[in-house]
Length: 161
Image (cartoon, rainbow, N blue to C red; front, side, top):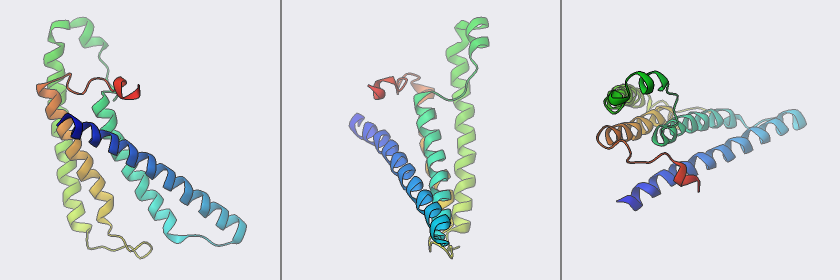
C-alpha cells in the first residue's frame, strides 16, 4: 500500500512537470509563429489554459499533502499549546468540508459541460472541471488521513532527498 501511495504522489508531480513543459512549448511556439510568421496554433491558447488549471489544482493537492499551505499557527502554538492537536484536527475537518464542496461543485459542472465540445481542440469543456473533481477527491483523502493520523505523510522533506 505504501508503494502505491508513493507512486501516486510521484506520478502527480511528474504529470505537473510534464504539463509545465508542454505549456511552455505551446506558448513559445505560438509566440514564434505569431510574431515571426503572422500565424498561430489556435488550439494552443486553450490547451495552455487547461494545462494551467490542471497544474494549479494538482499543485494544491501536493502542497496540502506536504503541509506547506498557508497557515498561521503562532497564536495557537503560544497561547494553547496543549490544544494544538485538537485545533489541527478541527482545521482538517474544515478543510475536508471545503474540498467536499469543491468536489461536488466541480463534479456537477463537469457533468453539465461534458457534452460541450470545444471548436478549437475537439475536447470536452468538462475536462476543465475534471481537474477540480480529481483534486477535490485527493485533498479529501489527505484531510481524512490527517484527521486520524496527523503525521501520516510526514512533511514532504523526505521526498526532496
